[in-house]
Image (cartoon, rainbow, N blue to C red; front, side, top):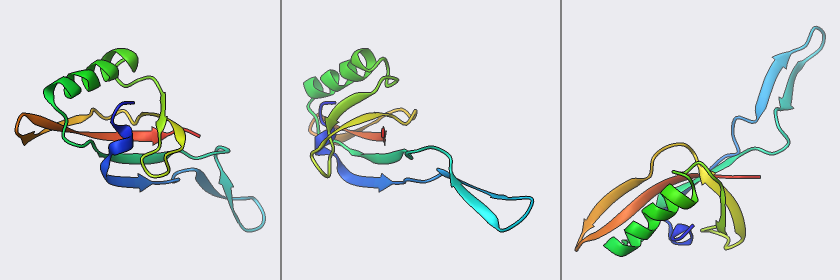
Length: 112
């Protein structure tokens, strides 16, 4: 995705929610992984984009990613390693910052 490698205010979360605890009929409480790999979250905002760059971002999001439903590969904003992402389901957040520029807030899932 264009601009993902330049996210500012980066926040990484997870893995979380991949464990379940239950009490067996006999013995101690058990903790088990629900899946083999847990999802991690990454969120942040782009550098200020020009109107043309924002239009490119929106076209990429709406058409290439089918309004954020498809996954995509891009350099991870912290490691630079090519990673597969998809939207976490929340809309992106355009934020005017002055001078005709716009930052875009994103929340993405890092796929295993």
